[in-house]
Image (cartoon, rainbow, N blue to C red; front, side, top):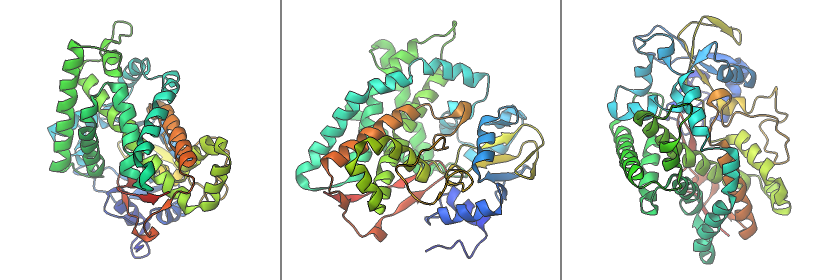
Length: 417
């Protein structure tokens, strides 16, 4: 049931961001876009007198994501005594490393230094070289269910494919893949707009402890995986210190499969919801790369980018933003901005997209975007080639969505073929 008519759009948005609303958020996003490109959000900022804002249109969201002169990701860049960070993530030691020390949470010059180091091992060319391995994994997963005539697309395909790929890249033993997924699922489900609950904090702690042990092992017995490469990489005498390395590996493993899994599962459901678009892909597989971009625009994995903070007083979208105010670019709303996308609420797998914000933008744009595109291309192509009669195996109204701050997705998707 849609309760958006009973409460203000701002309150409805807050419900979506906090993970407390399971309603379809797109009608809410459309209402807020009509209200303006920058809207104050009734979000408590702890002891701070600062305001929180959401950005609903593409131009303004792009500015916030790309303009490092006026916006930062770490509130300590404004005021070392800031208490804003506490109100967002909670004051839990077990989660601080993953939440505050990764690429997503630091500003220049540290961000450039770390990204330069990691990029040496995480190049688009290397991502493309993984195609044979990704294809092999996709085929093996479908081999296991082909004779059954049905599967849970999330558990049998969308989850294990990117987990296997990123774990192989990182050198995570196959016997530990299930643990990685369990921790990642716990983290993704628990990271909302508020404090970190004990269960999520424990997942973060266990995940971090596992990565530390894995690094110790790789230092003693390095191989040709990315963890070993990151341990050895140097740039002008610089290298990742232990804290940076652990945080980076947590982020790469978590983000390296969580968002792609969501792309594959939700993308499949969206195509099943739009049979005429699905038929276009079945008859012309060359459209799949453009379809992946359209699926990312139409309903990408991330609801919002990470919070940004104003470095100075400024005007944005007709609103007066004060130094220290928090700004949340709503990626899903910006990607349906009527000013940039014709028939923005419609799915069109042939759409020529110049830009979208599913992977963010600017210096903090997702490092793994090239890998996600490779995996999405292969996952959908293989699925449609081998299972052209794919259909939903439960009533459509029984499909449950899970919305949260960082991402949204499906816990299960029964299909037959």
